[in-house]
Length: 120
Image (cartoon, rainbow, N blue to C red; front, side, top):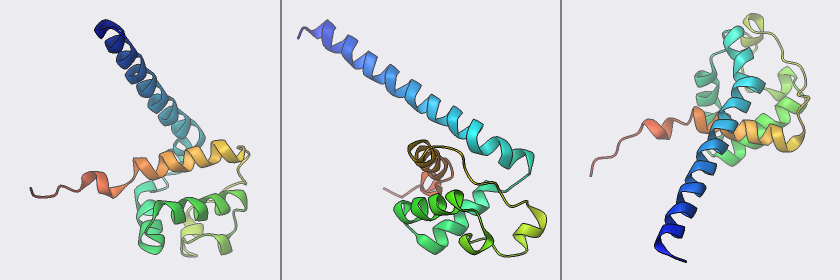
């Protein structure tokens, strides 16, 4: 492949990646965060609560997935008083693949590791 062809291919891949990340962010906003914002649900605090209890993204993803498929107080890690202030959510109507993508985007958006700066 010629040098110009490699550059064009690289630009196409970068553009596709950028649009995919944008689509994921839009999907997260539409399917999840718009209601969180409207109801003033503290997403970053919820994320930290899951992180403290489960510590890995895989465990958090699975726990959040189970809760969203069957939202009951017993399936939530939030304390009982949380539900006095915030409404119990409805069961998710998203298909499993879309729901998992939204959960992964949520975990990525609120990941505290992105704010850590390590000394060199």
